Amino acid sequence: MRKFHTIAAIAALAVAQLSVPAFADQMVGGANMSAKMNIVQNASKSADHTTLVAAVKAAGLVDTLSGMGPFTVFAPTNEAFAKLPAGTVDTLLLPENKAKLASILTYHVVAGKMTAKAIMMAIKAGNGTATLTTVQGEPLMASLKDGHVILTDAKGGMSMVTIADVMQSNGVVHVVDTVLMP
Image 1: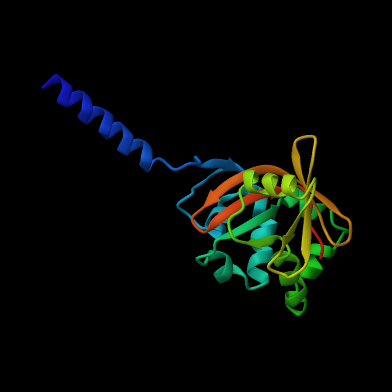
Image 2 (image 1 turned 90 degrees about the horizontal axis):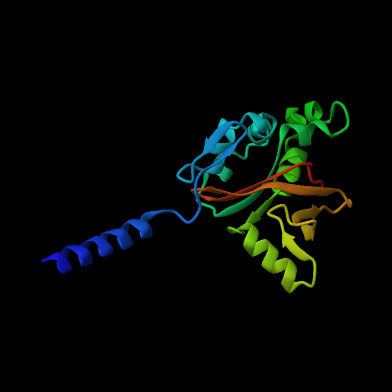
């Protein structure tokens, strides 16, 4: 009888371990990012991403980034947007600049779910760089510097991933410190 209980306990433990997600929820911008929520739902909770959320709304991308995906999003923080020249964000948020704003935002999105490990494997396979094709259509170059993933945009601007692998129900978010420009 004791042997049966031991086997049952081991089986129950194995089943319990299978139901635990591979990635635990993370804190971003003072809020818990739930892997059960989508990209827009989680970003809306982050105090560090209020500008990004306003931009996503102004560009009409809420439904897209709330959709099935999967997506890999390189999410600039408020501080990243603040690095842009004065007035840039306000100008981009105007209705007449919706297409330009959508182009910039979709340049931060890659189709599919690329974890940090997958990005690093692509960098290794590319002998130090990986080309990531964005939803916007233009490439981003990924490389490693001092153990951090660095993204280089079409204009030569560089952005560092500061928080990796924030799992979402429809993909993964990597927080970045600079807005990338197509």
